[in-house]
Length: 320
Image (tube, rainbow, N blue to C red; front, side, top):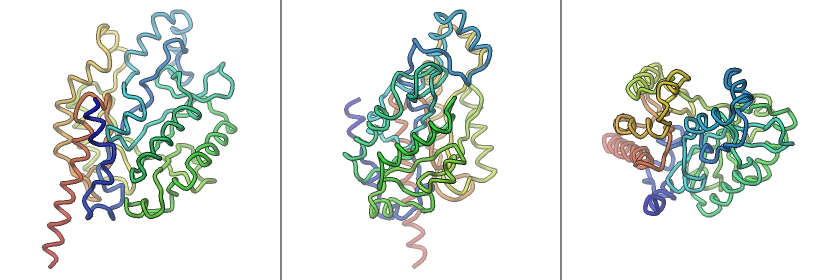
């Protein structure tokens, strides 16, 4: 793990010169799906936004339901700073308020985390960014289970006060060179139109493509079909994450998300290696994966940028 962390912690600062003026949404950026699921709390109830079936069974048999949800909802095992050291530059933060935990905000995926949003996770990211001044991280805040308007206001105010001038406003067309010149390191996508409307520091929701399947071949087929329709004009995510349903869970009582993901990674990463970033139809931007620390996922995605660098250099030569 230490060797892995050492390799990609400053990968953006080492990209070739010809990529420094390319819009960030035309680069290949590795991301983690459900970034905070490494700290799910087994003692917490099922999230309010989950199905009635899960909530009812959790009420009567928590000792059975919560370990099961934990096994399938845990999609990462590296902490936030380790993910960034591995090369992750897109963080998928799903935020929720616990029913009986005051005004504190937590993360959630099936069940709640034991780490809080403000004083723990975001502060850890701010500290990491201080140590890596040329790295730019996209933070996607979404889902917002049971948040009140006051919760949203306080969270956004905290984000703005914490990151301050490091925030890249949504009116910009960010490149690495432009971000470096303005000392900007954070792009915050916030899935609440009202808050985005009142705060130019926030970006609108980033489209996230994913397939509802545990079959990696179906995931790839879905992503290929989406690509052929044309890519969004700004940031967007291709999700390699597998998605289980209740029937699959019942039929596989001795498995978990890590087991099925590990088996699928060879197929999924094979697809990644064939991709190319850019504005063209069929090009990729952000690629998200589960368990980003168990394979060479980040290296695969980062390496796609060097394909673009070669293409850019070739085009320049043909222009003369």
